[in-house]
Length: 271
Image (cartoon, rainbow, N blue to C red; front, side, top):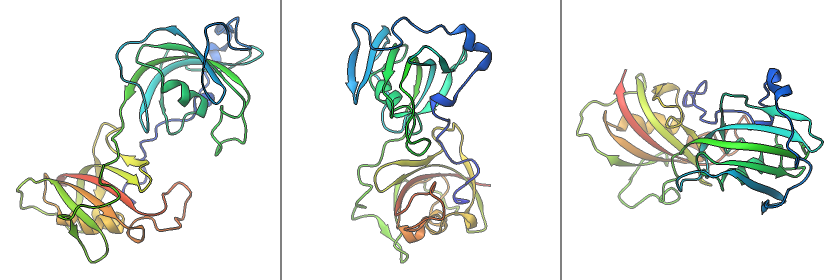
């Protein structure tokens, strides 16, 4: 939202696990005896993905939706050849970009848990990366979970008390500050925000970056340029942005979402 802040706003933090390779460590990763096929005690999770718990985790939280995780892993082809590994350091991975078979397994795992996962061909690459990847076997340890903001319950239908602007932008103050300072289109502001598509997919958020964003209001999306000046410093608002005030029905890039957006924005300060 410079469109908001194109250079750093993406929360999707990493490449699919298959691409994370630590070459010096490859020789130190012998394949397990059951690398070729699921062993006794393995359970089918979904779509031909099998897994077996190697070490139990703790707690009840499991990654879901747009969450990101920190994992340690090693992956092998079914002939025992090492494909990729994180090494001793853990790797950051968001479910939105992870290989489909890994996502299936992670959704069953709690922090501290280790699993061996057998993933069939076709579920080891995302369709946008490769048409079909090889069958793989992975050992995965879930180190931590970073929970993504959840879609608002009212994202498809603004409440009756929301303010409707002539452009079609709708906003509702979620938390009032009582402040009197408002930015203009010429202002640069510091904000925390999360934006979802109409399908409920988290598109952008500062929550996963651990820091707020600095945004030039006049260079933001049209919907932001109208809503943010209406906010007082310290306020949090939910903004419903129609397609023509966002990236449009047919965005210029495949990486940008088509259609309307819903954004929760907290105006921290005017820089």
